[in-house]
Image (cartoon, rainbow, N blue to C red; front, top):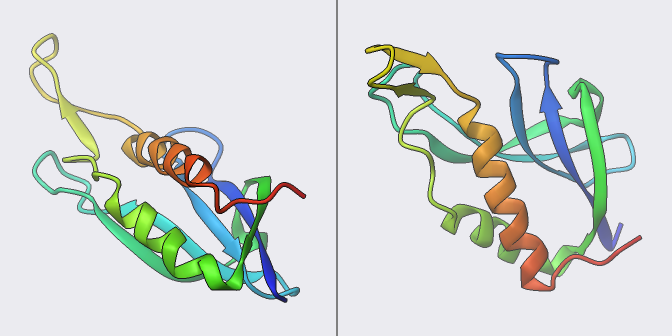
Length: 124
C-alpha cells in the first residue's frame, strides 16, 4: 500500500469511551492508533501514544481520507505536537470533586483539525 486510510475511531458506546486517529497500514485491518492515555485520576496528565491496533476492535470507525506512506512521520509529528489534556477527570467547584470527562475525545478533535489543516490528507 502506498497510501494508508485514516479513520477517526472510538472504543465503547458511552462513557467510558475512548477516541483516537487510526492509520490502516495493511489490508487486513492492522495499523497504528494515535491517541492520548494516562492515569485515570485527577492528577495524571495524559500522554500521546502510537500503538499497533486492529480496525475491527473499534465500535465506530469514520473514514476521513488517505495519507501517503511518506507522510506518516509528519502525521505523527503533527499529532504529537497537539497539547495533551491535563487529566481525564475535571475537578469542578460546583461539585467539589473530580467528574469524568472524555478528554481523549477533545484531543482527537484538536489533532484531527491540525492534521486536516496540514494538507497531507487526500480525499478518497
